[in-house]
Image (cartoon, rainbow, N blue to C red; front, side, top):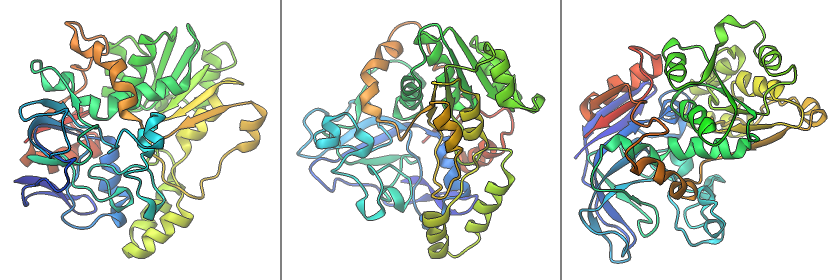
Length: 394
């Protein structure tokens, strides 16, 4: 089969690889019909290369048709149409019983001190082949795959794999009071959904911040108040002034470790990437520093007693935090990988009706054949051609 493989920094290629097969009774084989490039994939493209090896298959936002199931899978059958959550969870361990699926104890990568195994996401998270391919082996298929209606465009449901529940969790964690104000830093795909979900779940005012014109325009099209951060000298100060002189009730950081405007953090990430893999892994594990300009801005902008919810991925071990200010202002901070299956039953009714209240069919800007995935990565990373979301068709 054809699959997108990692070969080095900013070097991904579509290659012929062996077809996946059933390896465990709880496996399924899914023929992929659509698979997306995630913002988290760009971390692999740039800073997380030391945890990859040439030939690793990328991708964690797939959907498709079940081709085969193992003897331990009774809830699926060949021909079922499914979306595959990006994290692999058993559904029955201590963590899963508490709906903490991203911490599943059956698939935890304990050798690396990490949570549940992820599709297509480095040795830190299990080195499981990903879904930017023609076929995918799905472990723990007795629980993970989400069955969806047989009809309707793929992009009505595809984002259940990651970015839609990730945004839903971010908004739930933000806990904006009814009629309150929510600010969203970063209007990439997750940030776009955070803003729309915030409105849907009752925020009286949603303010989105970004520096890419196409992202600002897309959010504006969905009724979101937007701020272009390139026009602001003091972003937290501007938000505080906009919201009653005290700041938003809640702020979501939907940017993460590769924020613009953090030259020292970028230098540290670049320096680590130049080291041999073993040294780079040690430096990242023990002394890694993220680009924190957005997280710090979020912490400074939220009102006293407010909540900052972090959905953007961070990986630093030595990140400095303004703890004295956080403590004095009584800020709550919530974060973590999305527990996908915890939220999908809540979201599904919004996707299966005739309307489209979250605008899921108004996010993708580019649909490309799998063979053009390398161009898709480059375009997405460089924010060229108005690119906001790329969907690949194997």
